[in-house]
Length: 491
Ligand code: HEM
Image (cartoon, rainbow, N blue to C red; front, side, top):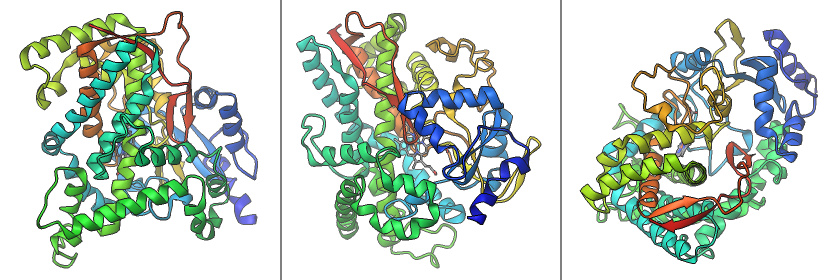
């Protein structure tokens, strides 16, 4: 207890202000309360307004410096990266199937794994996977056709979730599921169950892990029996089977997917051990399994949420939709239904819509955090070792000094040639050496889906629906609270 109470003196010692806390959960009770009333996103904005763009708070007894000053953010994520190599992952994730993934690995083991994983997401590798992702988007377009025929309003977020799960399933899990058309598909059911329960409010395991991290060495054995651990265990067991089978068949059979690209960098498949491959340690079998699992976690809800927010924004802003459709039409005339990867990625208005949607509604808001591995000073503020710095993305993206009229959806902001914006002003994928490794994959899938949606349909809001979109926070994500209901008509 003495140890615990000592940690709560840090904020005073470093001379920062911040919200009042208690010795049991720090500031978790305010966050939980705000969650109940639907104001959790506002809470961080209010605290920033009240305590400034560098303030201190406690999650359990862990001290967080919350930083939204852009120069300080650059200092942490880029210039002083060596002092901030590790991401703070809650102790409840310090066990299988997370501990060997990029999310959790630390310092040198993270660097080695990241060096192996990064090439799997190069532009060249994206081009190899383009056909697979395209085929999933074509399936999605067929589903939209039937939604359009019915003429009714429907929740497009659900269909985007089917699309992104189908895509990441085939690319990272080697599961060619039917989840776009069959909601009883076991892969779909287990992933949905796991995500629904992976929430601090619903899970005693997560709550206890945050408040009493010292209990985790014992508690972690209960993970497979928790509400989210049960579906997770089924998914991981299947994934392990597939990885083992692919290792066995490695020499005889190649598949174009992310799993293959990780296997190409693994000890098991190359037959090299670290001694033989000193310049670049290779991945272990567990690192392959756990990174594929991490890609499922990282690539499914994030991309579908980004797509859902964009669908709502386009339905709400017909002028922007018209401009986007004109751009899409020009390219349909030139290339037919299958626009090449390079042309798709260069469409200026689509790119501006992608950037502005992710600015206004960044799906991942609380993952841009780092643990300080060596005490240092950032813009005059001491950062003690083993404390965390967090840069909440939505607070930066809503700052009127950086983004005039921050609540306005205005893709044109990204079209002006004279923009001289701070490099940390737009960070939906984080920044620096530990940014989102799947950025290119997400961008390709997003742009393909919006391109194909706009080529055939007009999006509108259901009649009389003038309400603003209600959003909520679950774990590190910001997402629509009640789905995204739209109507489609044929063009
Ligand atoms: C719109 C979609 C996505 C968004 C908004 C997003 C956002 C983010 C953010 C904010 C981070 C933290 C970066 C930082 O701390 O600087 C992150 C990390 C990560 N993302 Fe994504 N992401 C998306 C899609 C994906 C996809 C499709 C994958 C994989 C297929 C992926 C894999 C990862 C991984 C593995 C990390 C951890 C990287 C590391 O620690 O080395 N993400 N993502």
